[in-house]
Image (cartoon, rainbow, N blue to C red; front, side):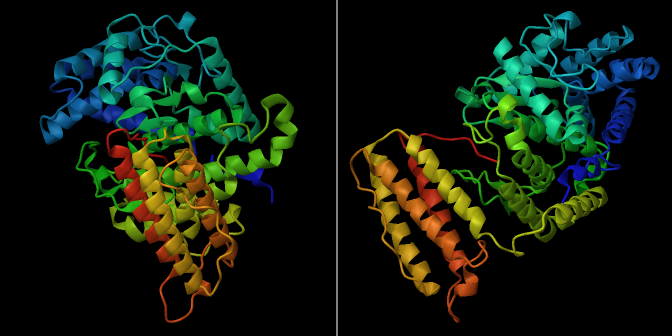
Length: 511
């Protein structure tokens, strides 16, 4: 199969055609400015300026994250009443007026850019983001944006250096070699790249985007090492921005029909089984986040497949694919996309608008065409064991303590008991098991991880199709897959509680 042909498929209208998506988003924001015009003179001023502006000036202005935040907050004030916002109504109006004046100059660069001669771009300035540097603007807009980021994320951004820029550009070039049409389209929806420290409030966040802060993506400076990782995460976050732009002009969710981004949030209902839940159940996703993840994983399945096919050819230029901070394996991306597609239909279908349902249908058709060996419908064993091993890897790096060693010893005994029960349910016998974790001693972390790898490897090897043990279960009897899931969920809760106790260490949720 020529997977490269799907680069064209994922760039077609309406869902993949970036110029179409962008034009529709621009029309939506112009309607919002028109609606605000009666009470906010700056909105009328900006709308008039945009009507006279060149396409590139309009593109950069309406992609500006601070402007779009100001418009959305004023819209929410008029439609749902006062809220606790990071920007006051007066400041929102000032932002809009400042952007109006910027547009009237006919500038090709964005309002936050300051001196365009000092801007550092990811690639072609016409349709790729620039790398944001705090203080670069030197004026009120830049100062407002820096304060907003600090309030929104409890930490500011880093000033990028030449090494950061070189690594970002190498990841961008790699994307262009693997997935030129799709990556170029997705990146055109991103206007700024923010570099985070990877410490304090940014700790544990490899990359991130938010629907409420559109136009900018955040990447962890500590992880800008492997070009393959950089390529994946650039595309990942740019795809979020593309979906955000699509959602601003289309009925992705039923609640989007009120043209307000501040309507009450949906109830979280889809469990991303491969992610560690933490104490707050952060792996339970609402319809929007589930849709965003599905949209990304279909594209990542293609990117990572092409990377694996071309890794040998590109190794001399970009290094090995399995370097530290590697790409997501393509099989995992396919499996997660399948699970999310099933979950959207089973759990979120009534919350999806017409455009949202058609988007799921389209992405599902692309996924069917790309994936020739899908997991059986409803399977989940592989996903929960993915989390099971992810927790084990994290624990290897956790600081030793008597409290954690005691927790691991108790979990080790409990998990070994469940493992034996699962083997009995499927009529198998346990082979030699590794030494269980002890309550004290520096080897408890490694021993616990070793036991988990033994359990996971054994169960996946026993599964006839690699995805479920239930075909082996004696009837009548319990579901072996459900027994494993219950074990993993219980262990996750206990580990989260242990990390929250004094001396424990919290980690940010995954994807």
